Length: 76
Image 1 (cartoon, rainbow, N blue to C red):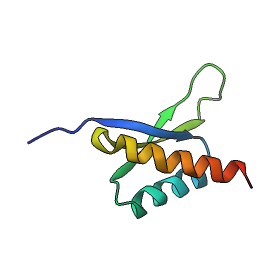
Image 2: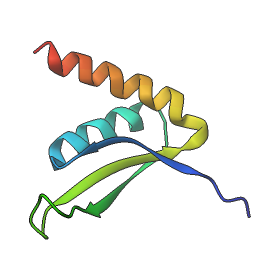
Image 3: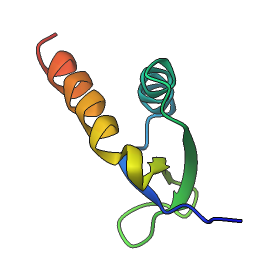
């Protein structure tokens, strides 16, 4: 069984923003998952950062979609 390398293409502590990016990747038929990472030092122990992860081979396309989303949200 071949193991795929997964990379983070978007991080946020806002679950609705994560869900929006995830759905845009789903629409582009890019397989993705969301992972939680507990933050330390400057945040409370319960704060989490969410990461959208994709296969390494989909990284370039995923970043293009994330960049388009970020540019669109800046212009609003």
